[in-house]
Structures are given as structure tokens and as C-alpha cells.
Length: 109
Image 1 (spheres, rainbow, N blue to C red):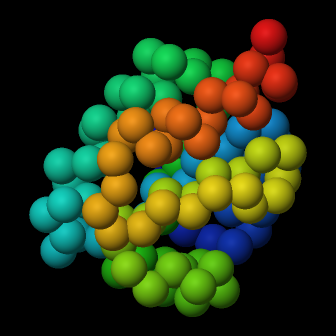
Image 2 (cartoon, rainbow, N blue to C red; image 1 turned 30 degrees about the horizontal axis):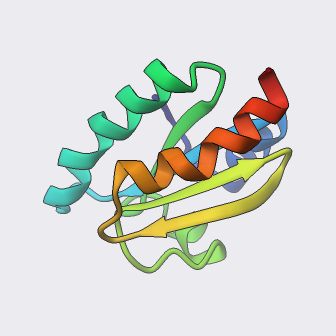
């Protein structure tokens, strides 16, 4: 998983990938540590062409603030460079899967 540490890196990552998922977490968030590998595994297995990156809100507070991320974990999905879906705090993998399936099939099937 790529670690994004600046707004420029974030913009470049989103521009380079038709489907980009940005996972916001912090070191002190136990839910973040449990959910992150599950999100990564689901994307790798079911949506292999979707790109995943992480922003550590403890080290990159500016990015979190600019995107109005005030709770972790937060997962933001970008389709074709635009924010399309945002999940925060407690969310299910099923909800994320449901939000990706149709756009993914439109991009890659």
C-alpha cells in the first residue's frame, strides 16, 4: 500500500488511477489497524486494478483537513479523478464492495 504524505502526492495518485481508494488512519486507532488489511485484501482479490493508498492522519494532518477527514478510519473512493464515495468510522466491507462493483465493471469489463 502506498503511503501518501503530501497533497501533491495525493493529487498525482488520484490522477494516475481511474479507480483510487485512499485509506485514512492513525497509529492510535485500533479499528484502523484491524480494518486496513481487510480492505487491502478485498481490493486486491476482487478489484485488482483499483489502486489503494494510505494517509496517516497523525503525520499528514494538512491532507486530512483539506479533505474534511475528521474521523478515522475513513475510506474515500475516487472514480476518474473525482471523489465519489466516502466511508467513515465503522463501515462494512460489503458496503465498500457494493460501492465499487458497478463503476469497476464500467471501467474494466
